[in-house]
Length: 302
Image (cartoon, rainbow, N blue to C red; front, side):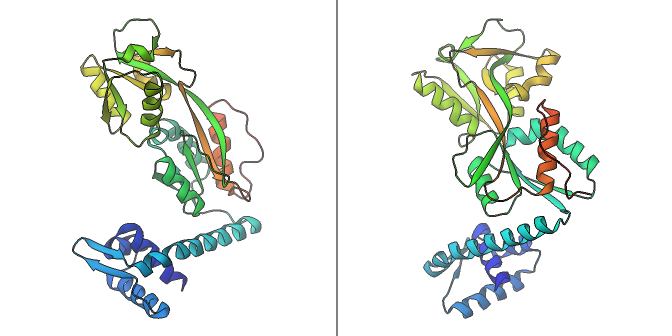
């Protein structure tokens, strides 16, 4: 039954029998047979084929939350057993926001691999909502996110306070800027839906500042656009450190905006103990960014 429920969840997530088969490392006929077997056991049609893939029937939609809850409980049982028995983890599954993946995690993950070469690192890009969902479903062991998280089921451990800076191509005036200075300008920002976009957009609206928000997929494309023209952007200091040191971009503080910073946090589940690999990662993050380690990072790791 567990395999059948896992298959239903994969089909629902991907909307495709073939993509579900790829995720589960099975053949498409095998996935089809498992869906049919679950339908026979439950006495209801759960999945319908459509010209665009597959979709769940009303019965499938009713069953899906229970299937997810069952799979979450199974993952929790396995993790609790592994933690209590002191088994060394074979993988570190980590969800992270795009900025953290690009600028915060690389040196830390490199050190982690050097210390624990037998532990595979599975790094999954995800916005805050998706990262929290994966964490609570036991699909990842931890998440590194800069957006605030309000959930009693998640414990957020602050790691880095990353100032937000006004960024332009060099040369630029040396004076600090206020958000009102962006009025009427083209302000380069990350795409809507990201934590950075929401933070900047909310701050501008609170102050009645009207400007054109030009969305970009990554900070790298923003930096390229800045170097080619006279536009301005708001980016975390960690994302522009190299360019500021090289003199290609100029960063200025934003005055009159107390929340002009991002707090990068490590998210873990509130209940139980984090896996040993997560504790090791936390100590490496603290060592890299100037915070004291707490506890034994390598308990259970070999």
